[in-house]
Amino acid sequence: MKKGKFAIGAVLGLAVMLTALFTWGCGKKISPAEGTSGVPGVTPARPPMTGPGAATAPGQETVLEVFVPCAFGPASSKIAKLFEAANPGVRLNRVVENVSVLAPKIAAGAKPDLFLCNGDREVMALEEKGLVAEKRDFCFTSLVLIVPKANPAGVKSIRDLTKPSVKTIAIGSPETSVGYYAEEVLKQAGVWDQVQKKLVRPKFPVELMKLAAQGKVQASIAYGTCFKSEEGEHKQQAAKLKLIADFKADYCQTVACQAMVVKGCKHPELASKLAEFLTTPECQAIFAKAGFMTLDETKCYEVPGEKAGSAAGAGKTPATPAKGGP
Image (spheres, rainbow, N blue to C red):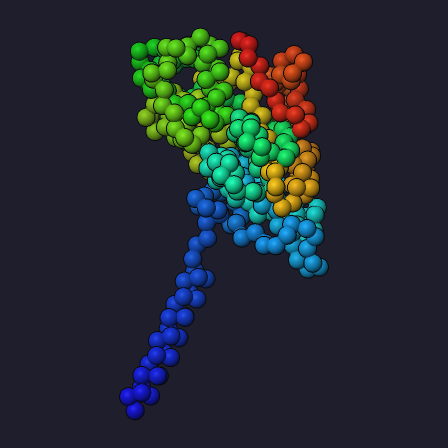
């Protein structure tokens, strides 16, 4: 009799445990991608299909894994729908994270099919490691000088960053495009030596606006696209900031955003097709609405052998920023 009661109790206990596990799995909130919960406009990432990257059987889908920096989160959501509609049987699995997380993952061995980079310095670093099969510019952004809205330090120009009232200035870390080109601007302006001791250099570009919005620094040099964003957290931060200068005109600093096909990925031809798709009028309109500069806009952009100020093309050769002064 005791054995019977024990057996019934065990069965009931197992049923309760299974029910609890099932309920937890259904109710669990799935983040859009590792470390990216709360990114607006991002479809939760589903695990990529296993097996060879060749043709799939009828009824199956080909999954293209794309690493997407947060700056392109909302825009890439719209573009994914367009690309999937134009390519039945293909699904984009977008991994949305900070660019300073995604690029090191590729350097460490991750092999997404395509990496959308808000900048070109990160791609150059990966190219030096032999990890780039193909790259192309698909839009541009600029750098801006921003301050807290009240502007307590009285900053009116980049040269004011040398004033005693400016104690701290945030620019990106040297390995990021936003940090590298901020250095170039400061050097061209002739203030680099005077401001070096004032610099705060966060690893993640997203921190540049946040530090200024919170009043933790007297000025920041950040991506203009983030400041002009009409979506999410960037818009909220921009409301607490004041624009002092946009460097695309005075200092010839427009930064190429590049699509990079990762060497050794599963679907290189399809990845290349997606990279080219980003240059279509439909996608360019999406980038423009998100605050990026399109490929056909005239911008301060220097190609080897050409003069600065020419319109950028949609070719596979990366931009070479001008080194001269204003």
